[in-house]
Amino acid sequence: MDLADRAEHKAFRAEVREFIAAHRHLAPEETADSYRLLPRPYSEKVRKWQSLLVDKGYASRTVPKSYGGFGAEPDILKTKIITDEFFRAGLPPALYNQGVSMLVPTLLEHGSEEQKKKWIEPTIRAEVFWCQGYSEPGAGSDLASLQTRAHEDGDDFVINGSKIWTSSAHIADMIFCLVRTETKAGKYDGISYLIFSMDTPGIEVRPLQTMTGHPSFNEVFFTDVRVPKSQVVGGRGKGWKIANSTLAHERGMLANTNHAAGRLQKITGMLKSETLNGRPLFENAVMMDRFIRLQARVQALRLHEMRLVTEAATGKPRNIADMVCKLLGCELNHQIDAFAIDILGEIGVLYDGVPSVHHDSIWQQFFMYDLGLIIGGGTAQIQKNIIAERGLDMPREPKSAKG
Image (tube, rainbow, N blue to C red; front, top):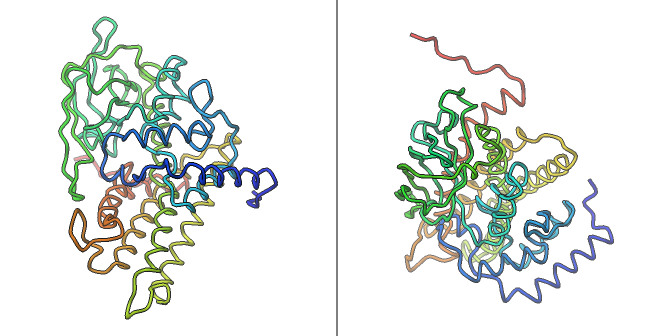
């Protein structure tokens, strides 16, 4: 791929810069990262900014106009230009979350026309906030062992069971949820992918306090929760296939190098402002060596992502490659957080209102949160096993003899 701007892309870059200059006063102070750390309902300013970006084609760019998107043809260089210019200007880019980044592409691939018309536009415009009902107390890495079940009652499914590690369930409007609806079918064949309101009677949410000091995960309990059968995505009993489509998009969201690039941009400013023995850390050889190593890894992963997007546009599968991105991206984000803490020294571990904090007082929370993402969405160990077995054709791990 030729990454140099052609005339078309130079004109587009100028267009993006003109938009930023004219509208930067409308941008919210909150960033996508801050919403991940402290999940809460979107403010009116965030929703208006997101809707403006959709209208201008800087968010949900390739989502068809008939579903509320901009309707542009895929162009990886234009996507890169948008990201680069927003980061250069220090403005929050388009939202990425479980609804926008995971459910919307799943609906585009597998949803009915009615489901696409009803849910995609309010989701990409931040009017509806989603959570994901996948993991259970006895079904995490082995997700297909899930036990949340539903029996039929007329035109409804009646759901009983529980989920755990359900991110943002305490503030979500809607949930996309895996439920075993065909009790006599095989382990992978009896699961359905349902979407329904979190206000449905019979749902109880219990927030889980994390080491960041805030509840971002939750337990969710279902007691005789009635969901119309029409709210199955992709066909009854076909949920495992749909779930894997969503998981592929989740890996891309969790490993998105925009996170790392944005943090490195902040670290650039910190290296200029923080000093050691009266000299800025930009002049410290050890710190600069670490910075350049991280910068090179971010750029390498970013180019790898661009290659995958290009291949996907030709129909090539990218499931194992996405696992590589998830594995390396989440570990890289955690190491960037650790570097920022080292730059700040002893005050880098402080947060939440301590008077001496500065630089957003958020790096220690990032460090603890991103450690969780090395586990969440498929642990690093599970990712390595799958990459080895399916990607490198290595022998499967031997199972213990029974008895």
